[in-house]
Length: 321
Image (cartoon, rainbow, N blue to C red):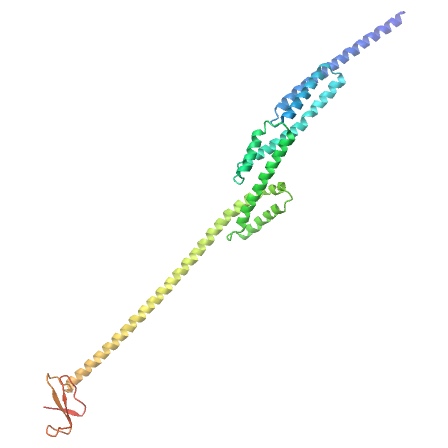
């Protein structure tokens, strides 16, 4: 073997060694990357609060398989496993977020005064099981069913409150129009999820309308009470004026009667006085003879009268002693 051939063989051996050394370094690097990725996935999945036991088992198996690949896998296997692990948590994180959202809503709803004991118990039970359930699909369906039933009950309860407010005789007209419009949207909603989306607005508006309706009712009733009081006061004043007028009229009539009586008494007294003055009254305590004018004691027969004490002298007669 000449020198040229020996040099060529030596160079080939050296190059092969370098390639082998380089490949070994690449595998080691991917093993390190895969190890870090396994650690990251393990840490992140343990931070998820609402994973089913089935999903936890699946993830643990995936990580165990990745550890095996890390120890004995080729460069392409390592590279593929790293790529796989980077994507593996996404669907589990999505499930966790969905359950977390539903459990948060359940926690808020179960304290709402409008839901009954049965729905409250269902929500409380779901919250208690949310950290330890086996199958995601079954638990998620149970959450959905409980939330839909509870939301339905809340929508009905709040809608009934709104309808009561709308039916009040004291609701301001503008409030009646606004509240009726929201209730109509709830009625026409295609499903309970859409109807529930109006609930917050419906509750707030109903509360505000009820408050304004109470104020309006107080004002109207106060005005009605004042009008009634004014009416009664006017009636009392009219009745008093009539009574006063009747009393004055009665007093005037009595005064007139008294005046007439006084006048009659005065006339009688005057007549009596005149009679007494003219001697036409028998003021003695015994009877007296009255003889017709033109006759005397001797021819008095048929032309005379006996007048008792206090009696009056007839016209055309004279006393005869």
